[in-house]
Length: 438
Ligand SMILES: NC(=O)C1=CN([C@@H]2O[C@H](COP(=O)(O)OP(=O)(O)OC[C@H]3O[C@@H](n4cnc5c(N)ncnc54)[C@H](OP(=O)(O)O)[C@@H]3O)[C@@H](O)[C@H]2O)C=CC1
Ligand SMILES: O=C(O)C(=O)Cc1ccc(O)cc1
Image 1 (cartoon, helix red, strand yellow):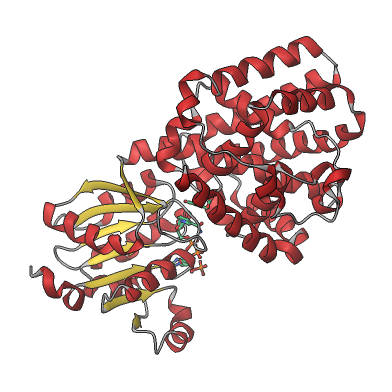
Image 2 (cartoon, helix red, strand yellow; image 1 turned 180 degrees about the vertical axis):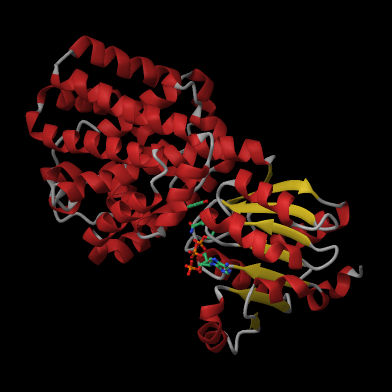
């Protein structure tokens, strides 16, 4: 093929024109790829065609039409639907095309492609490790070369170059293992916070326990998750075969630590926290000490109406349990930074855990609050219940219940979700810029 004019010749297809499908289509369009064919569900065809009529993006009625003409195809549908969608449209794939998917769990996607795509078709999958409102530049982009010629591999790479993301080559099993260790359990920590606040009818920005510093990160990240689509998190937690172990352990860590707190088993509690902290933030990880969240920076992104001086200590049960969970399962969160996402693990959750555990005074203050301040026990009890509720829903793969719980909490916060999402995006870019400077 002549690389010179490939942007005019190559037909690109996107099946599933939701948030991520649109992000990719717009990026390819801006980069000058001329033939971008997209579809969503057939019932949305007329309105999408109208909406995109002057954009250069070619809206088609369904996945058969996209598949018949496209040389490179991305499936960008809900993970829970991937098998059914590939089953329906896969057999229509153009001869000698290359097909990939954007779903967050790769085992199901790859198995569906292997099952339903014609044998002449190559499989090269991707996963942008960020949500649709984050700048693609510099973010990790996992590439999974399942079966793919050198020529197709090079072509898809040239196309994806316009995202300016950091490519990471993994097998689908490696991908699913890493994202189970990072995304699934991180989301559980934050969605449980939202549920606990909602169960108490309490907005965290009105409470002195959630004002200032790393509390801002907890609030913003929780609301950021609740501003995204429920199916993204449901899929990640329920469909990734490796995720359940972490989900169970996190909930167990929360509950066991809480029991030690209310029984005031001081020595056992402190020993457990300090041992976990020493292992996770030990010498072997000192070279990674680059998250460096600073109070001044975090305070600029507060939703709180409480002045910082009126801040009250917090047990940080969620963070203590997170580190206890990593320690118990022998997970080194720093090893997984190749798949870092803005919320996940690395930047923010690992960032705030690091902030807490690497500042002895701060950690001691949290431990003291956990063991002695009875005013925060109601919050911590609600956190335990919430983590247990989510663990059960995920364990039972109860997708309807997941949706209902998620939407109830999301509705509770709905008047601040957009604002929180904007604030968290600025915070993420500020922290990314800080990290790049180091
Ligand atoms: N959002 C995120 O932060 C990220 C998401 N991902 C993954 O990317 C994928 C897409 O996510 P996202 O764009 O956020 O989700 P969206 O819900 O915004 O987009 C998925 C779209 O696919 C449509 N769809 C469903 N079935 C079909 C079909 N048979 N034919 C055509 N279109 C169909 C959906 O329609 P309808 O809504 O009517 O069902 C929806 O419009 C998911 O697998 C997700 O896990 C990956 C990285 C980040
Ligand atoms: O931005 C983040 O950290 C998210 O958690 C968003 C996200 C959701 C699903 C993915 O498969 C990847 C990223």
